[in-house]
Length: 413
Image 1 (cartoon, helix red, strand yellow):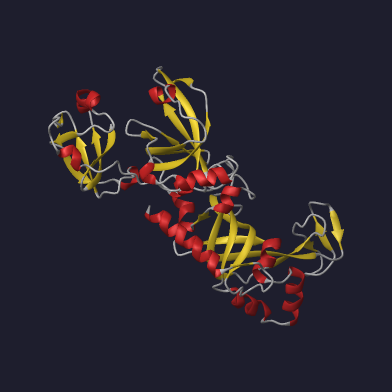
Image 2: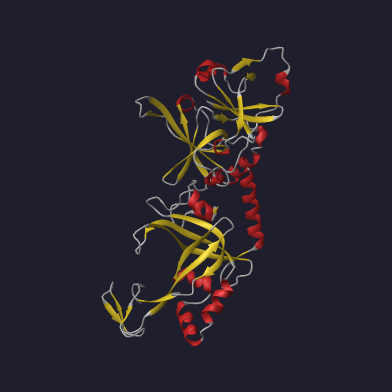
């Protein structure tokens, strides 16, 4: 059993094991003032705690807990309950299994359902959903919390020490023995949430939170900025479907070899030259021969964002935005000027941009091994001065600075 204790110095996480749970369970009531003794102090496991404290307490049956006497003045010295609420969207970058405090507008309430566990026990489950200005998340309630839920939609609800769960890319929360449902939230200043809800016509129009979105047009993927390091840490791309993420990165290298290929005018697949890199060209897929082949880009770029660096692939439509020219123009200029490709690559080097990436683990045709492939799919948007493509859309420095400040704030909360 885990709980958060608080005194005049601040909060600390406390976990009771083994026979200590049976011994003191009835005494451990939310808001009750107790004395705790003979516990073990250890370094806090930040992965599983939302409490802002470097240490935590472990207790068992040998530990002692007793109630404060009615004439004891200790209760008057204790502060109000402490919360460490984070934006719902920030759950995306928190470790699975960790516990967090969240607050939001109650968006929906499901019906209680009887669930049979693997051990054959029957328990009650109810799903509710809360939302803030950033995202919506479902919360699983169990047993008494599920059966006795009476809070209406539109109310501000807080969940303390809710555990993060993830299934098929969808992120949710679950309450456990150390969690709590909070309705007295005056200290959290919920007026901003209520104003947002009223201004939205008492409707929740934010995306349900997920690990990376469900496709290239996913609102969640656009709203959230991932880092390259998160691709490995969160296991993106390893599911049945590809993950789509938005990154802010810098181009550090573009391979000069095979930057474009001869393509079929009909299906855009690679064609085979039947006369030493000149026509006619044979398309095996269409079973047709063409006198002239189209030029289409196939770029390999190394990108970096300060957390990691990775190779990404950019096909024709996106590559045009990166280089600022069409593949046909690139082929023509390269034939006339041997230094053209080098000059163009150098113009794009160290340019910072925003883009969507498709992340998927696929089998390599050469080795047959599973290999993580990253593909630029949309929204190449330069930050500041667009080095490579003067006509590409620009994300202003002011906008990016504002987003960066929000990311820093989310990181430290």
